Length: 112
Length: 111
Image (cartoon, rainbow over all chains, first blue to last red; front, side):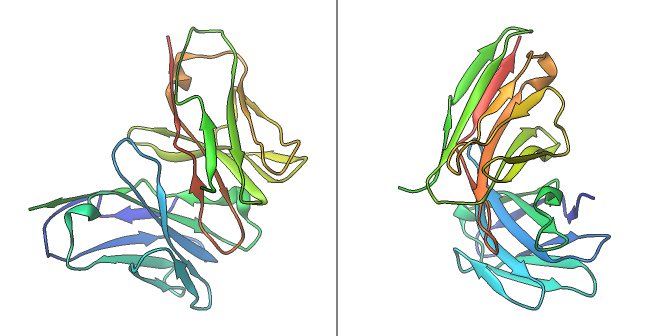
């Protein structure tokens, strides 16, 4: 089942903060976060695993609440380069490759 | 640089034509998948593979075939193109406990 992202869109001024949420109706094994700029491919930001492990390319801040089956991505002191569409993706077990699903995305616009 | 290579970047097909979208990765990833992305629909899984010789259907497999004869290559074949298959197609690969690396995408238009 597709994870639910909120909000659908957010507009920020440079330096402001925002939170993007991703929730599931089933218990999660992992949550991924990706950013996609217009006309480009999605880029992996972070994976949060059951048990508390987090791995990622950038200094992105995120949390994973296993009991609530939800994750939040924190955009702190936003920069113009943060603009894009953010997707979460979820897995329910270590071997559920085929069940991986992306959320519908959250469009983020950062203005000067 | 290591990554996922997709070809072609753009393609226009006539209804009923067939074609193959190529995908290759050089990261020795076990898992490869094909997604399509339509406006307002996010990324939807077409087919996936967990290793050479092993493929399975995703959420929207109808009208597409895949094969995986090597770890590196995972081509997607459109059997008889339809206007509903107009989309942006992404190939992606990953290893366990890490995220997907996506190819640059193929913009397909079926007329």
